[in-house]
Length: 175
Image (cartoon, rainbow, N blue to C red; front, side, top):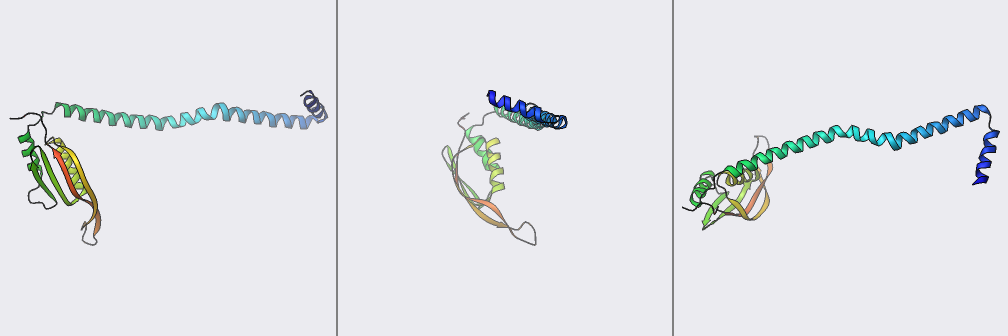
Protein backbone atom coordinates (compact mmCIF):
# COMPACT_ATOMS: atom_id res chain seq x y z
CA UNK A 1 0.00 0.00 0.00
CA UNK A 2 2.87 2.34 0.90
CA UNK A 3 4.61 1.43 -2.32
CA UNK A 4 1.55 2.29 -4.37
CA UNK A 5 1.11 5.60 -2.58
CA UNK A 6 4.77 6.53 -3.04
CA UNK A 7 4.63 5.46 -6.70
CA UNK A 8 1.56 7.60 -7.31
CA UNK A 9 3.12 10.56 -5.47
CA UNK A 10 6.30 10.41 -7.55
CA UNK A 11 4.24 10.02 -10.70
CA UNK A 12 2.14 13.05 -9.67
CA UNK A 13 5.32 15.07 -9.06
CA UNK A 14 6.54 14.09 -12.52
CA UNK A 15 3.47 15.56 -14.25
CA UNK A 16 3.49 19.08 -15.56
CA UNK A 17 1.07 21.67 -14.15
CA UNK A 18 -1.09 21.41 -17.26
CA UNK A 19 -1.33 17.60 -16.97
CA UNK A 20 -2.13 17.87 -13.25
CA UNK A 21 -4.93 20.34 -14.01
CA UNK A 22 -6.33 18.04 -16.70
CA UNK A 23 -6.16 15.01 -14.37
CA UNK A 24 -7.83 16.94 -11.52
CA UNK A 25 -10.56 18.02 -13.95
CA UNK A 26 -11.12 14.44 -15.16
CA UNK A 27 -11.20 13.03 -11.62
CA UNK A 28 -13.57 15.82 -10.50
CA UNK A 29 -15.83 15.12 -13.47
CA UNK A 30 -15.81 11.41 -12.70
CA UNK A 31 -16.59 12.15 -9.04
CA UNK A 32 -19.50 14.39 -10.00
CA UNK A 33 -20.84 11.78 -12.43
CA UNK A 34 -20.55 9.07 -9.76
CA UNK A 35 -22.30 11.26 -7.18
CA UNK A 36 -25.07 12.11 -9.65
CA UNK A 37 -25.62 8.49 -10.73
CA UNK A 38 -25.67 7.19 -7.14
CA UNK A 39 -27.42 9.99 -5.23
CA UNK A 40 -29.36 12.20 -7.62
CA UNK A 41 -30.44 10.06 -10.60
CA UNK A 42 -32.56 7.52 -8.64
CA UNK A 43 -34.39 10.35 -6.89
CA UNK A 44 -35.08 12.04 -10.23
CA UNK A 45 -36.42 8.79 -11.70
CA UNK A 46 -38.77 8.36 -8.76
CA UNK A 47 -39.89 11.96 -9.08
CA UNK A 48 -40.51 11.53 -12.81
CA UNK A 49 -42.57 8.38 -12.32
CA UNK A 50 -44.53 9.75 -9.36
CA UNK A 51 -47.04 11.56 -11.58
CA UNK A 52 -47.87 8.29 -13.36
CA UNK A 53 -48.08 6.44 -10.06
CA UNK A 54 -50.38 9.09 -8.60
CA UNK A 55 -52.61 8.86 -11.67
CA UNK A 56 -52.70 5.05 -11.41
CA UNK A 57 -53.51 5.23 -7.70
CA UNK A 58 -56.23 7.83 -8.38
CA UNK A 59 -57.71 5.55 -11.05
CA UNK A 60 -57.54 2.55 -8.72
CA UNK A 61 -59.19 4.54 -5.94
CA UNK A 62 -61.95 5.62 -8.31
CA UNK A 63 -62.54 1.99 -9.33
CA UNK A 64 -62.64 0.94 -5.68
CA UNK A 65 -65.21 3.64 -4.90
CA UNK A 66 -67.37 2.47 -7.81
CA UNK A 67 -67.10 -1.12 -6.55
CA UNK A 68 -67.94 0.03 -3.02
CA UNK A 69 -71.00 1.86 -4.32
CA UNK A 70 -72.12 -1.24 -6.26
CA UNK A 71 -71.62 -3.40 -3.18
CA UNK A 72 -73.67 -1.01 -1.07
CA UNK A 73 -76.42 -0.99 -3.71
CA UNK A 74 -76.43 -4.79 -3.75
CA UNK A 75 -76.66 -4.86 0.04
CA UNK A 76 -79.68 -2.54 -0.10
CA UNK A 77 -81.57 -4.66 -2.63
CA UNK A 78 -84.49 -6.56 -1.24
CA UNK A 79 -83.98 -10.32 -1.49
CA UNK A 80 -86.41 -11.93 -3.91
CA UNK A 81 -88.43 -15.01 -3.19
CA UNK A 82 -88.20 -18.09 -5.41
CA UNK A 83 -91.36 -17.35 -7.41
CA UNK A 84 -90.57 -13.66 -7.88
CA UNK A 85 -87.02 -14.51 -8.96
CA UNK A 86 -88.31 -17.12 -11.40
CA UNK A 87 -90.83 -14.67 -12.92
CA UNK A 88 -88.11 -12.05 -13.31
CA UNK A 89 -85.77 -14.55 -14.92
CA UNK A 90 -88.47 -15.65 -17.34
CA UNK A 91 -89.23 -12.03 -18.23
CA UNK A 92 -85.60 -11.27 -19.14
CA UNK A 93 -85.18 -14.51 -21.10
CA UNK A 94 -86.34 -14.19 -24.70
CA UNK A 95 -89.15 -16.64 -25.48
CA UNK A 96 -88.71 -19.13 -28.34
CA UNK A 97 -85.01 -18.40 -28.64
CA UNK A 98 -83.28 -21.58 -29.83
CA UNK A 99 -79.94 -20.26 -28.61
CA UNK A 100 -81.12 -19.94 -24.98
CA UNK A 101 -83.49 -22.53 -23.49
CA UNK A 102 -84.42 -22.73 -19.78
CA UNK A 103 -85.64 -25.78 -17.87
CA UNK A 104 -86.79 -25.42 -14.25
CA UNK A 105 -85.71 -28.25 -11.94
CA UNK A 106 -86.84 -27.44 -8.39
CA UNK A 107 -84.47 -24.84 -6.93
CA UNK A 108 -82.22 -25.04 -9.96
CA UNK A 109 -82.60 -23.84 -13.51
CA UNK A 110 -80.83 -25.57 -16.38
CA UNK A 111 -79.99 -23.20 -19.22
CA UNK A 112 -79.03 -24.75 -22.56
CA UNK A 113 -76.88 -22.60 -24.84
CA UNK A 114 -76.64 -23.25 -28.56
CA UNK A 115 -74.45 -20.88 -30.53
CA UNK A 116 -75.31 -17.93 -28.26
CA UNK A 117 -73.17 -14.83 -28.99
CA UNK A 118 -70.85 -13.89 -26.14
CA UNK A 119 -72.25 -10.37 -25.82
CA UNK A 120 -75.80 -11.70 -25.41
CA UNK A 121 -74.66 -14.26 -22.85
CA UNK A 122 -72.81 -11.62 -20.82
CA UNK A 123 -75.78 -9.27 -20.91
CA UNK A 124 -78.24 -12.02 -19.98
CA UNK A 125 -76.08 -13.28 -17.10
CA UNK A 126 -75.69 -9.74 -15.73
CA UNK A 127 -79.45 -9.19 -15.85
CA UNK A 128 -80.06 -12.58 -14.24
CA UNK A 129 -77.64 -11.75 -11.43
CA UNK A 130 -78.89 -8.23 -10.77
CA UNK A 131 -82.62 -8.46 -11.49
CA UNK A 132 -83.50 -12.08 -10.73
CA UNK A 133 -80.80 -12.59 -8.08
CA UNK A 134 -79.79 -16.00 -9.43
CA UNK A 135 -76.22 -17.23 -9.33
CA UNK A 136 -74.45 -19.71 -11.59
CA UNK A 137 -73.85 -22.96 -9.76
CA UNK A 138 -72.30 -24.96 -12.58
CA UNK A 139 -71.00 -23.85 -15.95
CA UNK A 140 -70.15 -26.26 -18.74
CA UNK A 141 -69.68 -24.23 -21.90
CA UNK A 142 -67.39 -24.30 -24.91
CA UNK A 143 -66.50 -21.50 -27.27
CA UNK A 144 -67.56 -21.78 -30.89
CA UNK A 145 -67.06 -19.45 -33.82
CA UNK A 146 -70.38 -18.13 -35.10
CA UNK A 147 -70.71 -16.25 -38.34
CA UNK A 148 -72.82 -13.12 -38.33
CA UNK A 149 -73.34 -10.51 -40.96
CA UNK A 150 -72.28 -7.29 -39.30
CA UNK A 151 -72.33 -5.35 -42.53
CA UNK A 152 -73.63 -6.16 -45.97
CA UNK A 153 -70.21 -6.53 -47.59
CA UNK A 154 -68.58 -9.22 -45.44
CA UNK A 155 -69.28 -11.87 -42.85
CA UNK A 156 -67.22 -11.73 -39.67
CA UNK A 157 -66.63 -14.35 -37.02
CA UNK A 158 -67.82 -13.61 -33.50
CA UNK A 159 -67.45 -15.66 -30.36
CA UNK A 160 -70.43 -17.73 -29.35
CA UNK A 161 -71.03 -20.35 -26.66
CA UNK A 162 -72.51 -23.86 -26.57
CA UNK A 163 -73.21 -25.87 -23.43
CA UNK A 164 -75.19 -25.53 -20.26
CA UNK A 165 -75.33 -23.36 -17.16
CA UNK A 166 -77.02 -24.41 -13.94
CA UNK A 167 -78.43 -21.47 -11.98
CA UNK A 168 -79.48 -21.53 -8.32
CA UNK A 169 -82.62 -19.67 -7.33
CA UNK A 170 -82.36 -17.50 -4.24
CA UNK A 171 -83.31 -19.19 -0.99
CA UNK A 172 -84.37 -15.92 0.66
CA UNK A 173 -88.06 -15.21 1.15
CA UNK A 174 -90.32 -18.19 0.55
CA UNK A 175 -94.08 -17.48 0.26
